[in-house]
Length: 167
Image (cartoon, rainbow, N blue to C red; front, side):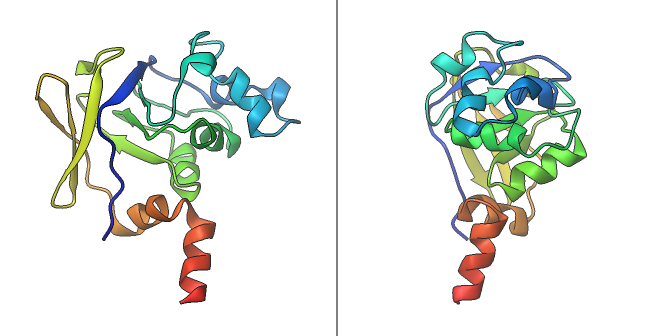
C-alpha cells in the first residue's frame, strides 16, 4: 500500500477544544473554501491563514474538531495544503469528515511534546505511524486502518470510489 507521508513539516500549535467554527467560521460558510481559508483559525491563530504553507501540520490538544458537522472544517485544511493534524483526540464527526476528504489525522497521545515551529517527519513502522521530532524522538500514534489510509492516499472517499469503479 502507498502510504502518505511528510518530511520536515513545519508545526503550527493550537490548544485544546479547537472547534469547527474556528476552522471554518460560520460567517464565511456561504463562500467557497478559498474565502473560508483566509479566515481559518483566525480566532485562535491570527497568523495562520497568511503564514501556512503546503506541507505544514497542525499539532493540537485534545478534542480537535468539536462542534458542528460541517465538512468545510476539514476541507479547508486540505485546501490550505496541510499534510496532517496531530492531536491526542478528535471529535468523532470531524474524524470521519477529515478522512472522507483525504485529510490525515494522527492520534498521538504525546502530541503536547511537539513544539511550535518544530520540523517533524511521519514514519510508518508496520501499520503504526510515528511522528519523528527534530531531536530524533519518535512519538507513537494510533494505528490507522488500511481503508482510511486508502482514502487519504486517493484524496478522499469520492476519488477512491471513482478509482475502484474505473478498475
